[in-house]
Amino acid sequence: MGNGTTQPDDGPERSELGKCYCLIFIFQIVRDANSSRFQVSEFILMGLPGIHEWQHQLSLPMALLYLLALVANLFVLITIHHEPTLHQPMYQFLGILAVVDIGLATTSMPKILAILWFDSKAISLPECFVQIYAIHSFMCMESGIFLCMALDRYIAICYPLQYPSIITEAFVIKAILFMVLRNGLLTIPVPVLAAHRHYYSKNEIDHCMCSNLGVTSLACDDITINRFYQLALAWLVVGSDMILVFASYALIVHSVLKLNSAEATSKALSTCSSHLILIIFFYTAIILVSVTHLAERMVPLIPVLLNVLHIVIPPSLNPMVYALRTQELRESFQRVLGLSEYVSRK
Image 1 (cartoon, rainbow, N blue to C red):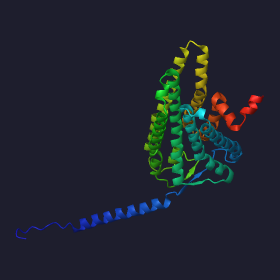
Image 2: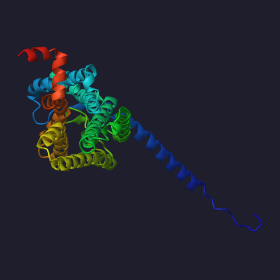
Image 3: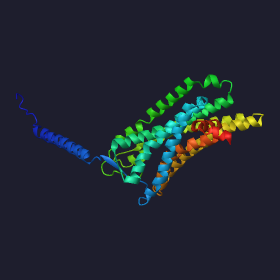
């Protein structure tokens, strides 16, 4: 006042700035309200793409495969528990594999059969994300059990004298706990990342089950991190297991070929043959499913069908191969069923 100068009046500018902040705040509230309003509450599993009109005809063979997987693996567990001669690390790992196979088939097949039989296509978001987690966990667990079985055969054949002191009951328990923790923890981010995506407009999945890539492809936001973690998990877990498994069997074959006795060579190879058949089938199927996903847009049915078959065929195939290729297990089956006396009479 003394020097006659006046302060600039910034009242209008502050008022305009305040209005802008209010408009931004109101816009965010409306956007969040719309987002929660249009966020889907369930997914629709459409079934097998391209053959919706006659896909129910596949329900019978799928149901039979699922029933075979349940009955055969339960029978393996009962036999291993009942027969003292099978209380060995190799058969203990086989028992764990049977549990994993039952879990793997049960995560998806009941829902797949419900879609094919009763047209029950809706699945809630939590159920879908739990199914994603279960499928990934059991798949990685099966790969881990194959690695344990390969290590067991490697030490038994290449270091037979040290085998009883290395592959002990404590070793089996530690190996199984490690595999459960590894696969259980590393697969948690897969459904968590999928659950953090926003699903607004589309909710129809051209699949019989909730696959991670099938679900996240419906998201409205960026799914780069989902794809990256899926790839990293596949290479770090399944890829490393596959490399170690085939390295173990390469060393086994190298050691067996150096044996002077043809009978010992034949016995060692026959011991590993059943393992190797199942391992080759398991990893070949995973590679085929991964490769066919690249051509999913051109032929969408093939990767989906392979995915479904990979869930149910290994669980039903594993006990059959072991029953046919392992004499000790086959004889134990006969004793449990009471067929040993009948076979001996004949």
